[in-house]
Length: 619
Ligand code: SF4
Image (cartoon, rainbow, N blue to C red; front, side, top):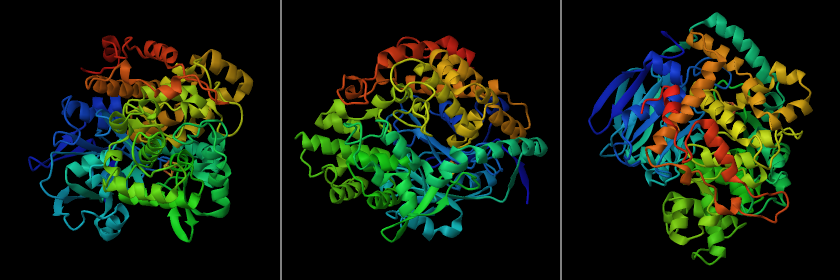
């Protein structure tokens, strides 16, 4: 078996319209500046597509990218990213997933794959080392993502769309095994290209460039991952559903289309209840020591346990407390290829529209039969489901209700209500792809997930811009590498400096001198693991620069699509005065002004020329 080091510096390009297959080289400078994963994917999009193209046209590109960690023993490193222009938001989007396709692509000798153009008829694409073949997928069109992968189990590891992607639902997903790249409708981009599935098999063995150096760093990193209370215990025992109790009791979990701060049936959907009554085993991404996924028995069916986001949005947000129903819908959503967050927010929005007499529909909160039918209506674009498949922004443009349409830049809000944690509001407003929880999410520094006192207060503007910027840059660097974001707790919180400081002093410094905390955050584990993988010295400063560069590159690309301050907005219900206990209106303007200044952007939210030049971003 041949070996490759952590990166091959090769990207496969398949142009379906021109019948062209070729390999692109990744220059050394791109590798240093953007690493891989999200950074590489965005750089490829920036360099190869013109501003203004339509997301569902042949001009759009679908990019799959792995990072240096894939195929090695780096903890929680076998994920990959899918990037493209989003049909839901009209701007750039990256979605992350832990299935096995990225690993197989890497073993086939490619750090990334670009697919562009359109096929005239449904096809599957096979990548078998350097051999690329196509097959007719007419018989596969209509299959759900699980049945498809079962039918083609011998063909390698897949990325595949379900019926929702075929029907160009604006928030359809791409699945790999039972994991999905969920956000921003990249399944519809794949569907528009008439691709049902792409398989990869490879015979290469991935090795770190400096095995001895990597092994030494790995020992330290693994110890931290396994000994930290979150990654070493709570995630293993409870999964991400552990957030239900903590965020549900902190006025953060969305309830009734984001209209209430608390849910009276919280315990019914808590991770502790799931653990006691349903969990069969832990599961997760290949080689991950954390294994945050869970499989459970729900009314006699063995199903994947829903993540926190799905429980919050399909549960409390729709006033559903039957966890077996939510698990069944999660299975249905994954099979049909729908994003659970955008689906749940769209259903909740229509329930509120119908309640207010703004649309004719039988959809109501707390009605499982109607919710279940709505999921299928959306996937197959039946009746009102056809409008719902366009997302809440377009629904509100057609039926009204913009003040309670919970999205930013067209992307439906994830499972955190900003009125319970104001930094999260700034994070949503400024995240490049819209209201995602995977860019600059401050909920875990505004509310301690372990139940203690948080780093900074949940309400008010103090310290929010500094923490949002730090976390946005950190998450972009992590998604470039491509470590799972769950490594952040053990790697950062085992910081020797934070450990010797009394907790009250660390909280005081975080709130009143936030630069102290964010500038002394310890990225040494990421730096030393990447140094061993890539065989060249990577410093903590390099990684901070990479994160800042990626975030600004994406902002710059979006500004070229017309994004500016007007789009960095929250629905008005979140910035207006509220009487609900535990909630305060978000003062977004105050936070934005400081955020733009610290970012080096002008008052309209456009990165200044000197900022882009400093980061080496060519315009
Ligand atoms: S922590 Fe969970 S999501 Fe992250 S790599 Fe491990 S199993 Fe996958």
